[in-house]
Image (tube, rainbow, N blue to C red; front, side, top):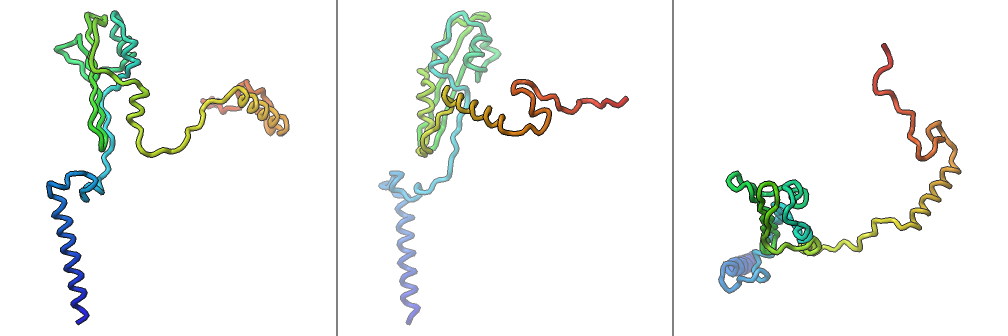
Length: 192
C-alpha cells in the first residue's frame, strides 16, 4: 500500500507539467513576462555594424571639402560603388537583445573631388548614443581620471623627497631625472 501515494504524487506532478507546457503555446499568454518559456533566454550579444556618424561630425561637414577631409571626419564609407563613384553611404545598425534594432544612414555626394551635398537620417549625438548603450548594471561612481594641480605638486614633492632619502645603487640612479639612462647593452657585437 505505500506505493499508491508515490504514484499519485507522480501523476499530479505530470499533470501540472503538462498544463504548464500546454499554456506556453496558448494565445492568451503572449506577454513575455507571463510566458515561462521567456523566463530563461539565451544570451544574445549586441551586434554593431557599420560606421557610427554622430550629430557633431555631421555639423562639421561643409560643401567644398575634399574626399580626404570627409574620410578623415566621418571615416571610411561602408558602401562605395563603382557605378556611383561620387556617392558614399555611411550605414550604421545596432541590434540588442530586448530592444528594437536601430538603423541610421547618411549619404555624401561629391562633384569631382569636392563635397557637393550631404543628407540622411537625424543622427544622434555621441552622448545620446552612449546613453542607449548603457545596460542595467551600475558599477558605481567612475573616479576622476585627471589629476589636479595640487595632486601633481604633492606627487612631485613626495617623489623628490623619496629620491633624496634613498641611496643610489648604481651610476644610473645618480643621473638627473630628465636625462636618459646610458647603461643599455650594445645592439651589435663589438667583436671584429
